[in-house]
Every structure is written in structure tokens, then in C-alpha cells.
Length: 69
Image (cartoon, rainbow, N blue to C red):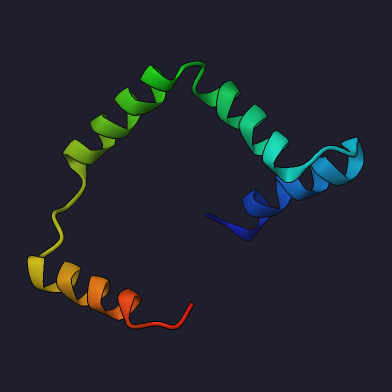
């Protein structure tokens, strides 16, 4: 995600007086009118994503679990 894209909801919230969460929900509903549409889009994208080697996934899990909260 680009910095500009991440900054957009914050600018909109500043101008509208709402919350970031409300703005992100609104943007999500514009992009995916229903939960089923969002899930279908994710499943389509997963079909074309490269597979992550098991060793790399195991390393990520271990690395994130060992970090202090």
C-alpha cells in the first residue's frame, strides 16, 4: 500500500469529523458491496498467488511468535 493510499482515509476523516474505522468501512462497502463479493475476490486472487515455501512460512511464524507484544 502506498503512503498516499494510506493517507486518504485519514484526510477524509479530518474533513468529515468521522472515525477512521467508519471511513474504512465505507470504502470497503464501495469496493465490495457484500461479504460474499469480497470473499469471491480474495479466492480468485489466491489462485494466482505464488506459493510460499513451508520453511519460509515456519520461519515467519516463529519470528512473529518470539516478538514481545
